[in-house]
Length: 279
Ligand code: AMP
Image 1 (cartoon, rainbow, N blue to C red):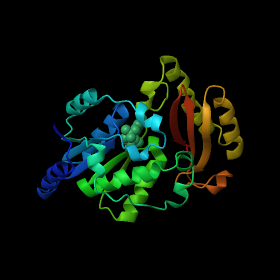
Image 2: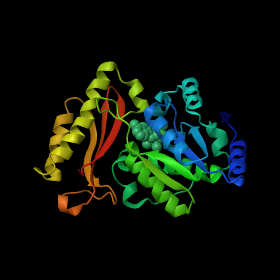
Image 3: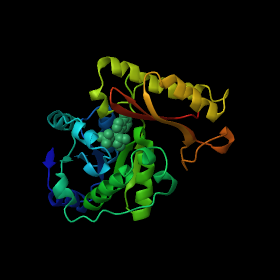
């Protein structure tokens, strides 16, 4: 496994692979790797000759300084995990060098840029789009792998690829969960053992919405979901929106693909999750 800090060097490695007719899968991460990330690596390995993983805590996508400063860092362990998985290249750029000379693009994401994560984390998706734009320009992978855990981010990436005409295939991968249902997340490392147990009620609540869909309107479900969560969590939002156009769903007939989304804080940790409400 090669480990590369330098953008030009990483580009040269991937370019030489592609010149030799090899397909390249790319898995961008912010490190503190867990089974969710490894599932993306494995999906890439199945479909490509070479797999590149990046570990880069992108400062541009953090709207709160403390969040960036507290972001877990387990680099040594991450590299060991990637080596064990048989990853071919790990790109670990330094933020200053990575963005040196880069003009940060400005985008109008439409509704995607005005709802849920976009509203609650101003500048977040602009930062995500900036880093992915630069990654794709640098590495031009054949395919790139993203988790449905960050469903709105996935939609932003698809939007970006269409907008910039990147010849990159975006592959969406299902959310990997702990046995309790809690979506795996690097941020879970900052929860206490009790907190991790309590956090499982996020998934239970999403599931409750899925199971109760035939009995209640979306609006009623949102109210009862917030009621269920509010004693344990500081709920930032709970919404049911269409999984394609991200319009709020007020009546089930309005959406063929309703999806529940939640952001909630526990023990000072911001947790997000989402679930399709279709059977
Ligand atoms: P992050 O390191 O949190 O920026 O995540 C890197 C990639 O891994 C993103 O595409 C995430 O959506 C994905 N990811 C994170 N957690 C999970 C999970 N539990 N299941 C599936 N994908 C995940």
